[in-house]
Image 1: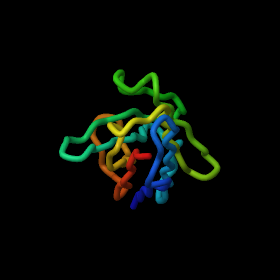
Image 2 (image 1 turned 90 degrees about the horizontal axis):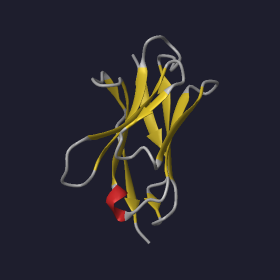
Image 3 (image 1 turned 180 degrees about the vertical axis):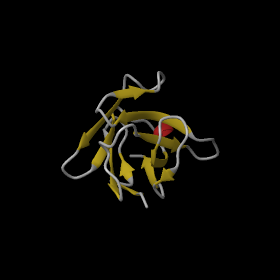
Image 4 (image 1 turned 60 degrees about the vertical axis):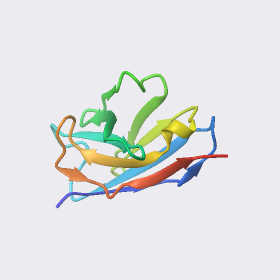
Length: 117
């Protein structure tokens, strides 16, 4: 059973960098041909895919967030990390990590991140 767990600060100040880590257990993030995504849900809105890192280490981002988003990984810890720079209150959301690039079979429980001074 694959499990994902998000971790990181729940409050970020405007203009700063949001950084979240997803720790995966029960499966390796380097196993072919899995993709590992970050998805968020702002209050009152639907889910929005942000980007993924593939088993190979390659990355792909939502065009609307590409200039501000970076996803990396630490294979020794079986973790992948989201960084979102220059955040604004519009980046307030529940952030999820999930396995999959388009469809997702395993999800973390989500973590609330609020952008506020």
